[in-house]
Image (tube, rainbow, N blue to C red):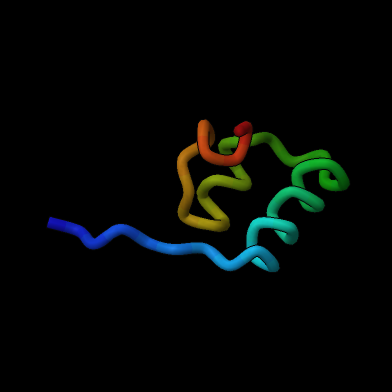
Length: 42
């Protein structure tokens, strides 16, 4: 069983800023950061 990952506030901010700035789709960002698209959209 995988352990639950914890993300720092700076990592969350980085992902949020890239989501706003980059013309990339959620699927591209989710692959880049190894996250689910639903986690990014929340």
